[in-house]
Structures are given as C-alpha cells and as structure tokens.
Amino acid sequence: MLLGFNGSPKPDSNLRRIINMMLKESGKDYRIYDLAQMNIKPCVGCVKCAKSNRCVMEDDMFPLYDEIVESEAIVVGAVVYFRKANGFTHNFLERLFPLRHRNPQTMGKPAVSVAVGGNEAEIVSDEISYHLNSYFNFEIVDKLFYNTMTPPCFICGFGTTCQYGGPARWMSPEEFNNFNKVTPEMFQKFETDNKRVKRVKEIGRRLGSI
Ligand SMILES: Cc1cc2nc3c(=O)[nH]c(=O)nc-3n(C[C@H](O)[C@H](O)[C@H](O)COP(=O)(O)O)c2cc1C
Image (cartoon, rainbow, N blue to C red; front, side):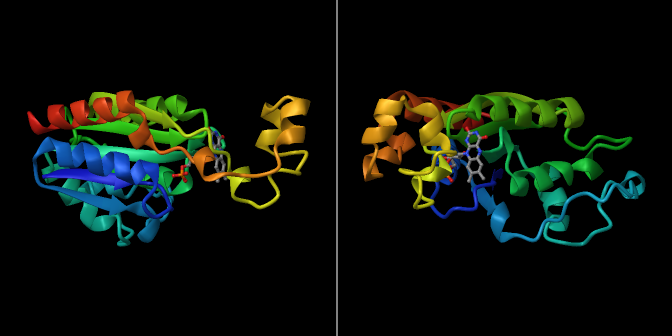
C-alpha cells in the first residue's frame, strides 16, 4: 500500500491531482489523506512518545502511525504559504515525531516530496525531503515541485488595483497599469506542462517498482 498526504486545503488542487496521478501510475494500491479535512493538531512537545513510539494525543494522526509504518512508501505534498510548507502539512510533519525515537520506525522507507507554489515551490519540496530524510531516515525517491505563478491576489478580488499585492510587485508599472482583469488562463494547471506530467508519471512508475 502506498500512502499520499495532501496538504492543500483546496478541492481538486494541482497538488492533489499530482499526488493522485503519481500514485495511480504506480499500479499499486494507494490511499490519499486530505490533511485539511482531518483534525491533526501541532506537536505539544511533551515527548511522551519516546516511550511508546506513539503520540498521546488521540486525534486523526493517531491511526496514521501504524499505516505509515506498514506502508511501502509515502508521498507528502504541501502548498507553499509564506515560503514554507503550509500549516496543514507542517502539523503532519511535526506529528511524525513518535516514529523517530530509539527505534526509528521509518528507516529506509521510500518517500517522495511534492510542493506546489506560486514561484517558490522548489524550496519547499527540498524542505519536506530534508525533514523526512534527516529526522526520520526516509529514503528520498525523488523531489517534485510545480510553480503555478498564481498568487492569492488573483482570487482576492482586489488584485488588479491593490498596490501591495503580488501583481503590483512583480509587474512593471506599465504591465500593472494594463492589468485590469484576471482571466482563467492565469490559473495554470500542471497537466498542460508535458514535462511535468512526464516527471510525475515517471516517479509513479518508480514507486510501483519498489
Ligand atoms: C496565504 C498564502 C501565502 C502564499 N505564499 C506564497 C509564497 O510565499 N511563495 C509562493 O511561491 N507562493 C505562495 N502562495 C501561492 C500559492 O502557493 C499558490 O497559489 C499555489 O498555486 C497554491 O496552490 P493551489 O492553487 O492549489 O491552492 C501563497 C498563497 C497563499 C494563500
């Protein structure tokens, strides 16, 4: 069984579709957890998990420990908020702590990191891989990122006029002056990027051969 952890709070996001395509391409059984739909609190640092390799907080993270330990591989995906993995993903990454103590339970387990961002997704994909490998000894199969070039300002309703948002900062004064409409083409989909699709499927097939 392969497990995907999707940190995007949006339904049918690029991130979720990437994770789904990757896992489907593996040909193996898989399950995707939508972290934003779950009750996963941040780690409270009590370190009681050192004794049992399990967390004392019995929220929706609790059953995932056994599933992760028993899985063949995991895929962890975040969307980029403020140059970091977003909060839903971050809580999940923190709460892996019980699997780290004394008898690390994820030693050598294959993992893939995925990040979708406006323009800084690579940094976050690297960050997730670092977290999984350096603190939990997962073996990183690959790291994937996709930049949508879509700032939140494209959906806030004020993006074409706000002087402080992304468009005002990225565009030249002339471009910003002519920017008076947010059009559907400004919301990029990874499926239109053939190279990216090829990479997603290729990583999926590698997961399938594990
Ligand atoms: C609160 C917030 C903060 C963001 N900060 C960043 C950022 O620092 N760097 C970046 O590359 N993208 C940033 N973004 C853009 C998102 O990562 C981008 O819109 C991405 O497409 C999110 O995926 P989604 O469209 O599937 O939600 C931010 C978006 C939001 C809502």
